[in-house]
Image (cartoon, rainbow, N blue to C red; front, side, top):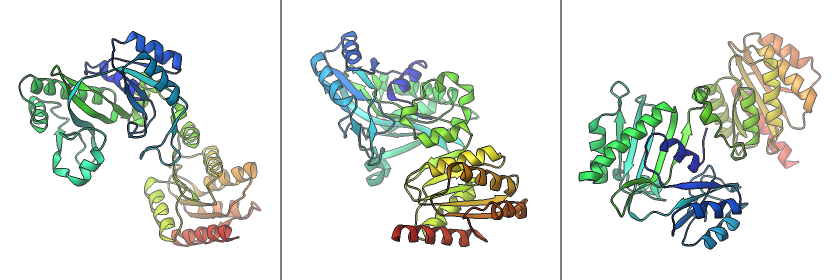
Length: 391
């Protein structure tokens, strides 16, 4: 789960992390009121969307008067920002963050994430902070340093020294770096974060480290422990189909292709998506119904797939283990009878109760294409979709 910048700074402030003072605003009037509460005379008006690259897209503006705050608030609210992370459709700006301007001497990059290879939290730091960190990683990877924290020891003084050395900080700034990395690590663990990005981390003219921007993503599996974080969720920033899927504990992610997929097991789902690509089409979604899905959950999953207007064909690929093929079949039949079937449907069933599942499908009276294995299923759905496109 992701949150907005102003919310991320609110979370970090609880752990003593140095951030600039700012106030969220949902209307132009609120933006003006926020600016009047800040010391000024420099203000930063920031569009709040769940995507990076806002600055280049015109979503971050530094202004020097309350009149200009009003002007920028009027321009940004309702604006659709298109960045590298939003995709071509962009995201509509529904809220702003009016922040006190900062006098910047130097910018750095700092982030923390869970390193899956080592099962440890790793900090990533670079002297090249700012909007083009992705380009830095591509062109000069040697300028990016990783600092790994062993969970057995937690954060230690040498981690702070490593950060200071990486950023070229000495004296009091080095001490601030040591304190900052400790605060960030504490926040990361305490709130079950999956990703924390500070870009940029800056040195101000008065020689203070300040987190000028903050992006946080949380481990969704741990949200039950953090009702305060759940309250920060902004559903307008999420895909409607993904929101609906979460109500049924379905693992669903919207993609850009034309073939809807319903699969049990993440590995099999990935293989299904790959083989669809191999035969010349692209998946419209990732959907893992899990090993303990009920008829109702399967029906809900099918309805979510068919609600996607980009879907031109559907592939159901089930290998029954814990998940029984007859349960999948009952759910699919129930959903099709409820919402109808306007695109080709290929079903491949194998494993527990496969004969019962096939019998349910065959006796349903539905126009379903049966497949013997994954390769056969992928060929049939791709061929069906191509014929539909050509018609």
